[in-house]
Amino acid sequence: QVQLVESGGGLVQPGGSLRLSCAASRIIYSINAMGWYRQAPGKQRELVAIITSGGTTTYADDGKGRFTISRDNAKNTVYLQMNSLKPEDTAVYYCYGTIRVRSNTYYEPHWGQGTQVTVSS
Image (cartoon, rainbow, N blue to C red; front, side, top):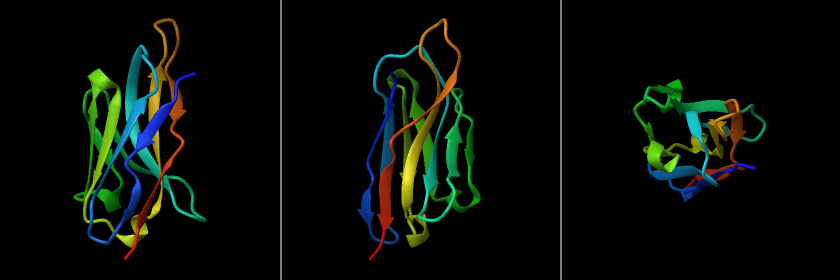
C-alpha cells in the first residue's frame, strides 16, 4: 500500500510563510501529476495547485503570486511554498498524486492524510 506522507503544516501569523512537503512512502514505478488540495471547515475540498511530471503548473486564483508548487522527481516529492498567508488560507491541506505503483499497473489517484494549516494572530 503506497501512502503519500505530508509534513510542514502548523500555526502561522497572517503574512507569514509555510512550506509543505509530501513524499511517497515507498519506492514506486512512476508518479504523473502531483498537487495540493485544501478543505476548510464546512466547505468542499478545493484545488490549491497542481504540477505535472514535466513541470507544468496550475494554481487556483487566490494562490497565484503567493503560492509556489514544485517537485523533485528523483525523490517522488512535491512541495508547496506558501507566502503572505491569510486567515482564509486556514484549512487541512491534502497532497494528491496519480501513481503507477508497478510497471504492470495503471495510474491511480492517491491522497495523503492531510496536514493542518492555521493562519491566526
